[in-house]
Amino acid sequence: MKVFNVDAQRSPDGVWVLECKELGVVSQTDSLDRAEDEVREAVAFQSGLAEDEFKIEVTPMEP
Image (cartoon, rainbow, N blue to C red; front, side):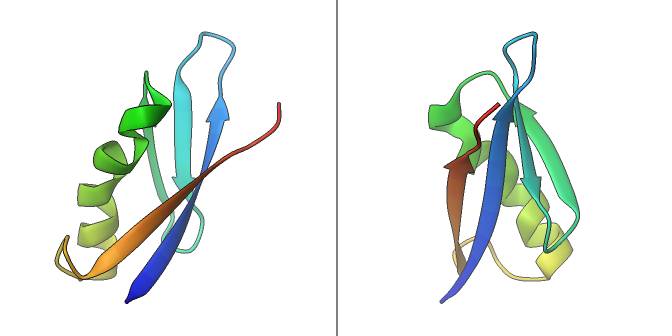
C-alpha cells in the first residue's frame, strides 16, 4: 500500500499546517489528532487514488 508522508508544522497562531511535498498538497487543521482526516481528500485527488488505497503518516516538525 502506498504511504504518503505529511509534515505538520505549528504556525504562530496555533494552526497546524500540513504539507505532503510529494504531491504538492497543503492543508491545515486546528488539531493534530485530525490531521490525517483533514489532508486525506486532497491527497486522494492529487494522487488519483481512492481514499482507501493509501496510508498517511503525519510527522510533527520542530519549530
